[in-house]
Length: 577
Image (cartoon, rainbow, N blue to C red; front, side, top):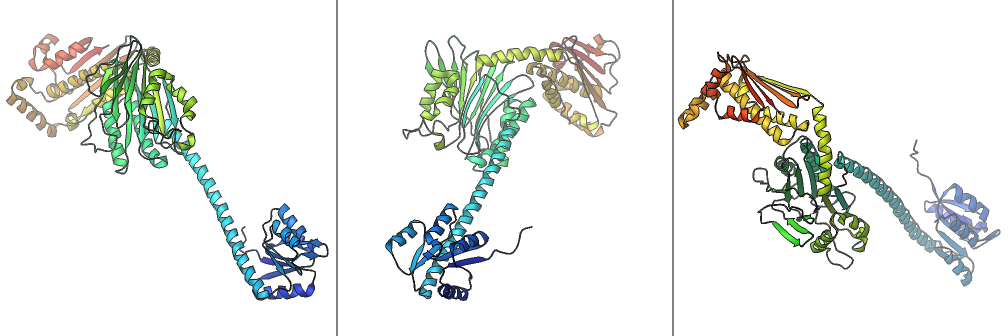
């Protein structure tokens, strides 16, 4: 339990002259202060260990020594108790010795108590102020220590949350130098279910924690959307909406996002408010093809070609979602060489020569070092500037296309093998008015992507199921005649009739979709059935009915390995591979 009583404070009067010490102690008592009278040094040494002493008034000469012995003991024990020395004579040698050992004043007897007390009050006020300052210093150091501990824990948590599920690849090399405890820059990577590789470098406005908070939102959104198989354009629009919605108006996030699309052999580049992206292709490598003006060849010789892709977009969060437009570069995926992504921290950083590092210097290093750029900066950055003088977060990343391709090829084999070794069944049944409003097909596309099916295959499946589902509703449940759509008036009538059926649909009106993956045959079996009565006769008769044999059905047959319309015509089965 903490005591609520404050310790008593004392002034020690040390003099072997009983009359003189009594006179001074009575006067100090009259001023409302506690006094302890000591006759010799031994008593003084005892009292200062037992009590809180604010001032010691000691005669220079005592029967067991001089005041110098007390001063020496106080210095040895590092006690900062103020001392005033009294003496009947003012010998210069004694005065100098006392002052050299820390005495605050030296008075000559007989003492004028009024003048003496004025000095004491000034001295005690100064001592109390020093004690207060010292206490505040101790409290401030404690607060700073606690703050540093909390920041360390917060930084550890921040880095964990930002970098969770962030994989270290040998084809991605980075150099990062934060200007504060928290960095407003991040480099993240992610793998989509279809096998595409995503890389993002983001730079938030400001420094420290205020810059790090928007980065956490960007990181969590990037990680979630990439893992769920959303497209690059959808990812960008969602990132912009989130930053715009959840941050103050003066806060935005510049960033670069790369997507290596292995299915189409393309590299997609989005640059919003960042310095240019550099791409260096080695000798005989096929350079990206694009007609966009912001692509420039910076260096071309018999060995290397350097191209840059400047920002053509606003940074995330500046424009509201309804006015934001994403402009994406799409180029051939290089078979070798490197890409260089960087924030503006390094190029704007002042060097030891008091001038910016500059983009030309960085460009020169990348041309000469390629993928070794980040290792060089890690080893030699101190030659350009000291870590204590970093003005902004510095982040640089290089991507090795040859290693990226090798990684993808090795991963593709295991990914395909894992798909072939597994099976699944996906069923959905929709009834009533929901038939005309439910958008379940997007979940199908995402479901297939999660299992690692290629994007082009997912799109084929999406097209087939969408066409069969639409036919089941229109021609099976609603019994509409597609011949109405042959002219503009009929087309309008067709959809008018279709919409009018919405209020009449009941739970007895339904469409069911079943999708089964047969790993043994590497086939996807799709079955779509409806509550309609179907058609009488065999498949040849059914195929001759105009509303069932339009361009949609021809497309389904083209995309499928086999097609079967099961009599009486309300079940369609296809196989895709």
